[in-house]
Length: 562
Image (cartoon, rainbow, N blue to C red; front, side, top):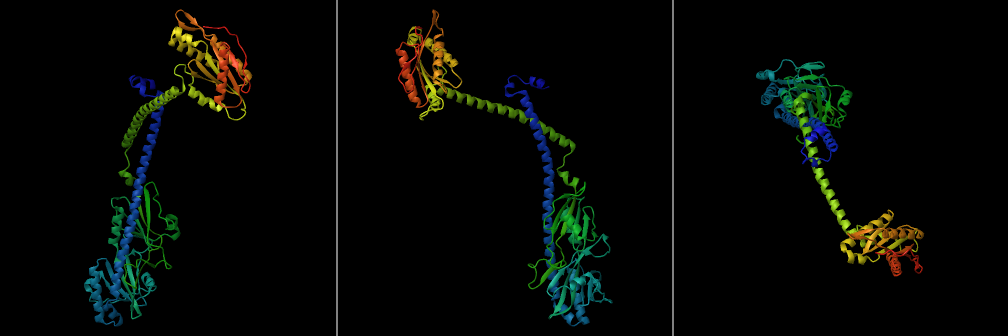
């Protein structure tokens, strides 16, 4: 299969592929990487939507609480103004029918001005109703009620008697009508309660009751706008209020036990994370309210917006969450892809992987080729500096750099090294008789012949003209002479093709110094003296000079001439 595919590529383009196996490995690797990236992107889309909804839910919760705080402050201010009004004060101290009628009119105007007010009434210190004005009877305000209700066993009265003279309490939301643990179609309402104090004497309590349906529907719009299949829970100290995006009613249920709330939402110090509570629902939770005071039913709400010397209280406890349950599939409908869309994205990802692999392979070959060329050029420059252009052996400078570490200024080395100076005998006659090109060929052959006789760590360099220098590292003195002799015999045994007329033979003279100490320069100088002695004695011989003795010559056979 691979061969068939690559056979379709024109030969001019095949140079851009580093090899079939490598290309296919790169393609498959990038395909896997792209598919993993695509899967991660699908997951990140979902997580980003969840995080966005969670952030908006937190912002909306704080906005709702601020609205509630502001409205509660406004209601408390109205209650404060009403409580301190001259007409109400006069009625409390002198309960005449005329004064009662004036208070009726005052309460009537208040209800007409504020549509959320359901009724206002005054209780005496024993919890018996003294005066009541309800929206339903606002057309008959001149007529006083025939009966006075007893509220001494009611929750409003029990909360009222705990208040000080300068305190105003905003109660928890509770159903206006209905009893039991569950009220369907409940109408949310709450009360504002304050003691009636005149000249330090308490005469009873003023109670406002307000319908919060409009207020709750604002919450619903905030949280469920655009999410028809979602549900909203608002927890208060009285119970849990629930509605959905498709419903126009609110349902009230009694509050779960504290331990159950803690188990579901935590202690209230840390905001819970979004949680998939079922296959259908994902739940977002955010807390509003503040930590409960000593009395959990009475906690400061906002004193900054209230009248000096008076305190506005509320009954929000520490764990009072606003919960939004969102249909998971509907929530992801804006980012979820159909199977055909996912297949198309997958195809594009695989195609992109193939293109990236081929382009990457092409770029890699170009870059690696450029790197290889740079290395080759650098190596050529190094060779030009370190190798003799004619013979291919080391240059004089390179040899000195390499050989210096083999010698030391210390008195003795662990193992001695040896320097051999080699000079061709009568080499000038080759150049004169056969030309310099013939002489160059002779030098090349001799350099190769000498290299063959050397060990791996030995080095030879062209010292100048027809003279060579050889380094024998870590070698005993008794071995040096036999190596030099092998070299001399090898050089003498070469038959050089210098002309069509015949062959020529060249001999070599070698001077040796074997040293355990001293400097490289001194060793080369001694070897050069030994070479001079060999040339002086007729050439084609090896002369060894011990480093610390006089010249001791060991002659070899002489007589090979050109």
